[in-house]
Length: 91
Picture 1 (tube, rainbow, N blue to C red):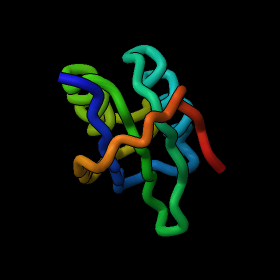
Picture 2 (cartoon, helix red, strand yellow):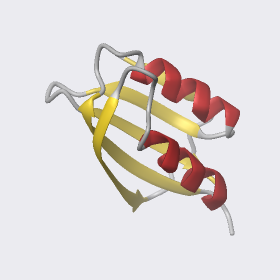
Picture 3 (cartoon, rainbow, N blue to C red):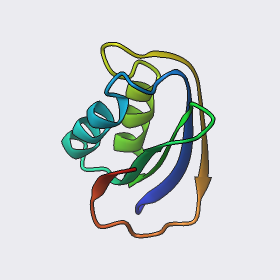
């Protein structure tokens, strides 16, 4: 099985708590490519690409998040592969 792509929205107290920084650290640790960014709604959006096992671990981590975050809900859906080369934090 090849790489998969997921669009993920994380809801809760996820802005102003270093959520994006910790998300990048976890993505790099798991060899996940894509990006993470804050949304004007107070949520965080991430595109993540990698193999299924690593993506599952990444999504599981997103349910916990950074040390000061409080995640209420994580919604993920598979989408078309975009072939991201690395994982970045977008503004």
